Length: 272
Image (cartoon, rainbow, N blue to C red; front, side):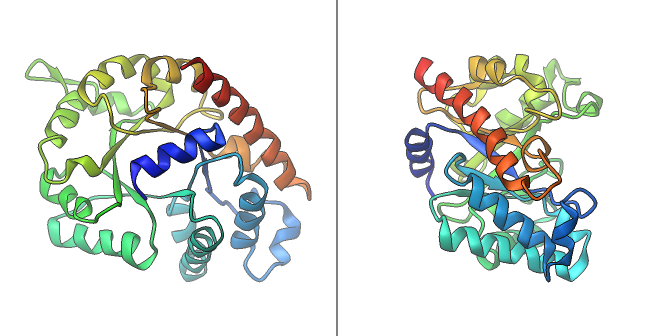
């Protein structure tokens, strides 16, 4: 999927909502545990109830890897279901990969070729040769960690190195890499006050913004400082939507939460 196609979907659905599919068997409705594949059953119900309200889904792979081969099979079924039934939806493998070049090449093939995700998240700590293998894939996107929403982000990301905050150096350097036009960036919603400076460095790139909802991020602030003429935002909510209810009405409750966010996003788009 191209960024133009993603922007068209945002304008069509009046939404830039990304829903995180972080499935914990201890939190899903107990009646689903009787299913042959409770993880996929949960995901399918959430997707069926919310696909018209969002433009992206983001499974965090840790929540699938934790259940071994059955979890990985559930992830495969989930992405196949999305690609078959909702090919217009942008898909994100939240895997946070990044290793030496030949290993990154294999990670890229796993998510872009085998599983056919549109994008994957990566950690940039190992630098250029750990990220560029992901950037080789046409119409696939590499979403690089820039400034994250967790408290530990202040340990390194905002520290000053040679007079420049490290996250700014990461952003600047990444623009020099081969096929850097395929980069998007993760910026936490709890760091909304940093978005104005980030937009000076990457004025046109899409930003994946987690942290709205359960982590306390503010949608209005993110839009104020981060939105561009081409929108340029994917705002993620996971727990706040998918665990809105743990009863049989869980999918309907998720749709209500997603609709609330979509309506706020529609207002932001109209104001923009």
